[in-house]
Structures are given as structure tokens and as C-alpha cells.
Image (cartoon, rainbow, N blue to C red; front, top):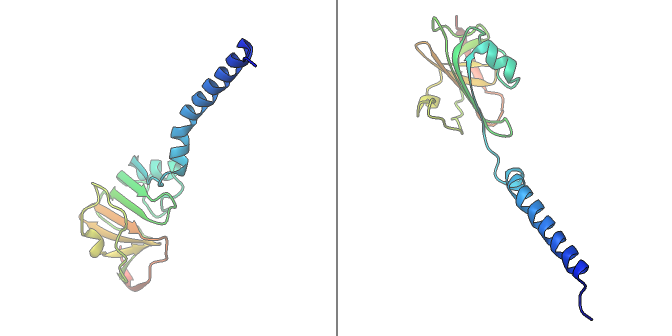
Length: 153
């Protein structure tokens, strides 16, 4: 029994539709099913950064400038860099002898090895202050275990 022209046209149209839908959705599925990508962002000020991204620590001064931020897709690992005019740690930070957890992420603006010499802790972040440059990291989202030696001001 020969196929009718309308049946062949229907099958062809369905195949083209399925191909087009697959071609359109395949990249989206790859994004959703592929490996998670870290969040990366840069901001002009601490105030702008905190307003745009609630995951940034509240202890970051509003007056900080040149803020760089990177977080794993699950938020457990984070890197933060900011220029602190005057080079003073935020009041919420304390001098500490941390049980250092190295940073699990990397970024071109986060100096290699700086995570091996923390100078303080700020909330769940370990911090290294280098002049007016603040480098902070959080590994695994775990609370940092610290022994406070004195308040840093």
C-alpha cells in the first residue's frame, strides 16, 4: 500500500520539528546537565557588591573598592578581593590563629599561596591583608575554627 503524499509531508514536518526542537534545547540541556560553573563578578564598591549579590559577606565595608568575587556553584567555596582604603580590617574581623583551610578556587586576581598565610578571620572567611588589599576565602562553607588573639582594628 503506497504512502499518501499528505502522510509523507506529515512525517517530514514532524521530523523537522523534532530536529529543530532538539537542536534548540540541546545547548540548554548541556548547560543544565554539564559541570557547574563558578559565579564570577566584579564591582566598583562594597556597597554595590552587597546590593547585587546577597552571598557577599556583610562585613565587607561599603567603602571597599575594586571588589572581585568568585564562588563555586554551590556557594561552599568563595574567593574575595577588595581594596580597603586605609588598609584596616573591618571591625567584624579578628586577629586569629586559624586552622588554615586552603582556598579550593583560584582566580587571576587571587595571588597563589596567599591562602597559606591568613592574618585574620572575618565571619566564615579566612583573610590575608596585604597593605590595602584584602584577600578572603572560604572553603567548603564550613565555619573556620580560630583562636582569637586580639581584636584587629
